[in-house]
Every structure is written in structure tokens, then in C-alpha cells.
Amino acid sequence: MSTESARDLAVRCCVVGGGPAGMLLGVLLARAGVRVAVLEKHADFLRDFRGDTVHPSTLEILQEMGLLERFLALPHQRVDELRVHFGEDDLAFADFRGLAPFPYLALVPQWDFLDLLADEGRRHPSFTLHMRTEATSLVFEDARVIGVEARDPDGPLRIRADLVVATDGRDSTLRRAAGLEPEVLGAPMDVLWFRISRRPDDPPTAFGRIGTGQMMVLINRGDYWQAAYLVPKGTAASLRAAPVEAFRQRVASLVGFLADRVAEVRTWGDVSLLEVRVDRLRRWHLPGLLLIGDAAHAMSPIGGVGINLAIQDAVAAANELAGPLAAGHPIDEAPLARIANRRLLPTRVIQRLQVVLQRRVVAAALVPREVVPRLPRLARWLLRFRAVRSIPARIFGLGIRREHVRTPAAPPM
Image 1 (cartoon, rainbow, N blue to C red):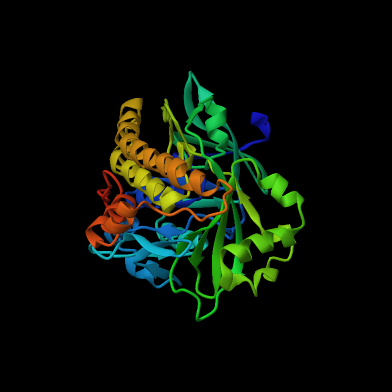
Image 2 (tube, rainbow, N blue to C red; image 1 turned 120 degrees about the vertical axis):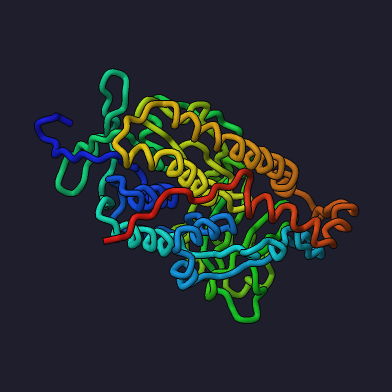
């Protein structure tokens, strides 16, 4: 892009990516009086199969921001325990009912959540949300990031900023532009997502089912199930090369009560592929640039923690940066390093747990076999006790080193 053809915009902070982390960070900074621009490449937030499991840690943050009542007015499902079916065994393995003050997960379409954050941001004059605006590269000056090159419907755009924050996901454009490479931890599976109708006499809550070499998770969305069918890593293409009827038969054999409605999956076009990744950057920042959320660490879908860990990153970043940015102070790498160091421990712990569960549960479940695997007898006995079931609920629901909102909230205009 030539300088002559680009329009210019100047802000204190440019946030690239309008997902949960980017939107929440933009709102927190704007509430503190920081002039912030959030860039989102799509025209709206309406995309299926995005992370929308909101954990107690995120509900606590929304309460601290004064947004909880508006959030809970959105259509949502509450889940107080997670269950898994191993053949004839039906076991609860995570129980949220002992967590206070939010003893449940809230399942909310991500587009509704993002619209709520966008509406809150617009109440503050220092917040701008640029839809259909895609960041294409970083702007450097003397080895420091000073902004981004972008494109919107009116053409090239250059946004100059004292700080750029990349929240543009696991395929981050800005991460590539910065030359930062993630450490890949690996995943043994990919996920095929699809919808299938839900009936009043179906099970009431989310659950997983493990069969003979198959595994699927069903999430209650009210009048439909959001279904995740797990396949060994790299095998989705060969599965999709077969007629979709073979896939329908797999689903029906695994979850019997869906047998009379699997025809709702009409073609492979009704099935989306999520290539599961678990990785993290060794370095989350450069002078003038910070990466958080999936741009810094891609999470496995196990535990539904991705959105919540990203939001924790955003709160930590706002707590550290809002004051200096609002005061007009230069931002050196020291506060960026403090944010990265603070968020590295919870990222490592959760990813380590996910990798262990992937290897010991998911990979084992996807091995072709004639008999459905069973949990060891000791594990089945231990899961009878709520105190045991509350441990994974607390780890995933509240997280490690959870953040609290400490940024000021200027009155909206």
C-alpha cells in the first residue's frame, strides 16, 4: 500500500480483532478515557461454532463492569454439571454447583455477547469500532511498531497508535507480520461441528458420549443441539470424501436418540471443520505491540476455556495499560512483559491439562475397538463425590490466577 493512497487515523491504542478479548479490552480502555480503535474484518459477528461457553470467571468480570444484568438478559442456557456417557456408564465429571457466586456455565451465542460489548463501547466517546476493516500489516519505525496498515470498504487505511494489540485469533495476521512463531504442543483430534434439532424429551444438559472408537459432545442450545464429532487428527478429509450418509450412520450409532433426525445433516456443507491446535508464543510482545488471546495461545476446545482465558488476558492488559495510555505516557516493553509474564502461568497450566486429557481420554477414545472403554473403577468411585467433581469445575470454571477489573470507569456520554 502506498502512503499517498492511504487515509490516516491516529489513536492511543489500536486493537486488531473484534472477538471477545479485543472487544472487552477496547471497552475497558474506552471506559478509562483511552482513545481506542477496534478493527474487525467481518461485517457482523454472526458466525457459527465460535466459542460461547461463558465460565464463572467471565461472569465475575461482567459483574465488576456492571454488565452482568444485561448479559443475563440475553438468550442463554445454564449448565451446572458436565456429564459423559461411556457405553452404559453415565458419569458427572465436573460439578459447578459449589462455585460462588456463579454456580454454572452460561452458554450464550458469541454474536450476542459481542453485540453487547459493542453497544457498551459505543456509549463512550473515545471508542470506535471499525467493521469490515482488515489489518494487513504492521507499520514499523526504528524497529518499533507504530501502527497498522488496513483496508476497509473505502480503500486503504493507516492507523497510527502508541500501542497495537493483536487479538486476531489463531491465524493472526499480525503475528505473522511480527515474525513471531508459536511453540506447537499438538492435538490428536479435529472436530466436525454441526446442528441437529433438540426435542423436549431429550437430555436437558450438555454431555459427551464415547463409543467404540467414536466420541461426540452435545451442547444444549434450546431448540437445537450444537454437536461436536471428534475425529483423529488429519482424517477429516477422508471422512468427508465418503457420502454424508455414512457420517449420519456414525452419529446415529453413537447417540441413538438422534437416529430419526440425522437426515437434518443434508450435505457436507452442513458440517464445519475445526482444526484443533494447542500452541503458545514464546514471546508475546515487541516494542509497540502486544499479542493476547488466541493470537498468543491457541487452546484446545476441552473445557471450553478459550474465550474465558482470552478475556482474562484482556483484563490483565487493561489493568496494566489503561492508566499510562489515558495519561499520554509512552508505552515501553516493561508493562507488556509484565502482562505476558502474568498470563503465561495460567496458559501453561491449562494447556498442560488439555494435552494430558487429549492424550489419555480423547486419543484413547478414538482408537477403533469393539468394546466401549470404561473408566477405571477407582475413578468411577471417586466421581460419586461432589468434592471430587468440583475440582475440574473450579480449575476450568475459575481458572488459575484469575483477573479482576481494576480500571476506572468514566461516565458514558
